[in-house]
Length: 191
Image (cartoon, rainbow, N blue to C red; front, top):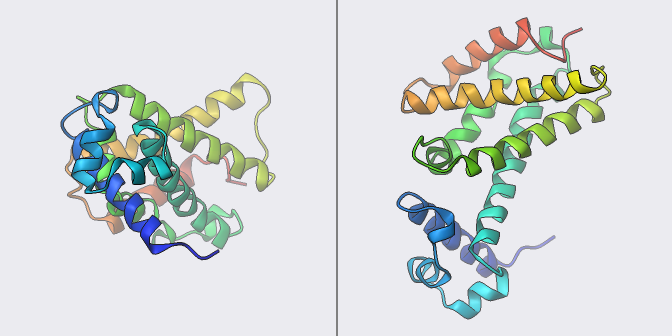
């Protein structure tokens, strides 16, 4: 599928403007007019892509979550879900976060409404569940499964929040090594 470069540029401008505005005010207080002004596009262009500011955020979250999904699944796919075959160089989650660090700084900021965290949490939880199902990994039955998925999701996001709290100072390679140690001890993919 060929993408129109004007569309891509417009969407990138809107996402960048949205991130700048989210640093100073909540999503519900951002107007289309100020978003368009900062993105340097007109309202007609905005409405040809989105109905409201929430759709811009939702679309950006979808882009980030899809990249997060790929980063999460890559080492498992390369090892055919055998933890013992995984090495630190295969892990891509921390590289993903660095790529979208502006977004994560907003989502993990303690002054920002929890709504953003829960949107991210629900999205990550969903793709972890889909990954388990797709790869036919044995899951616990019933309610325990829900708790296991939430535990797994919070474990990953907890690492990212701690990295955020340390101002992203630890390099990704060191975090990869630490994550290998953690997941080899407690993973639904372990045999």
